[in-house]
Image 1 (tube, rainbow, N blue to C red):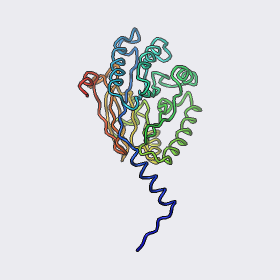
Image 2: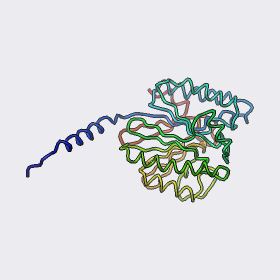
Image 3: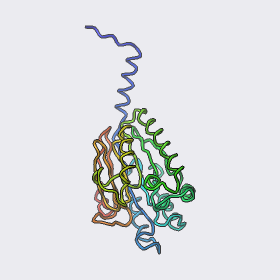
Length: 279
């Protein structure tokens, strides 16, 4: 049987082939909890300075496509000295490497208010936005508004509405990967685990898990726990990364290196002391 290809069909096939070939492997770094002031109860932040400068120096040496820092940039919300130090060191990142900052509960308060959200935006920029790197779309959200929206219900509702719109756009964009970056983990190990300080309560957790799965999200990256943790809900990975700043468990200060090859995503946590061994 002779098969006829019409000009429009041929063009479509060529475009799909080109799109597939253009998806080059790349690497990005996911950090969390630089949290200036946490080591020494806001008296000073010399240890945080050393750690973040090392993380940025290694980023400049290893040249990822981008760096994303998943919240708790500082320890005391609105502290100008801590904010200034974070921004001073962040500015040392090679301009060819994009830096994406995420808000954490220590940046906007455990229970955010319109005032604390506005203060964050004045110092760091928007608390929700999207970005694209190759065939990946990253979606950054303010998880403090999910954890406890009680003092900023309008802002929480606006974020949810915005998120639904942008998940749909991402899903229709043809991106191979849609990844979400937030501060709090939806869950640490098990999507059915009990509610606690370090995860999102079960009712909202289920809603967001269902939403992410509906639109094809396969990875959610978070921090907050100051340790590493990992869990799955079906095809969705919940990846919780230890701190650049002060650890609260067995995992030393460090960050996660993520390798993306088409739709295949591999990741591993590296301590700051071990990074110098990487080529």
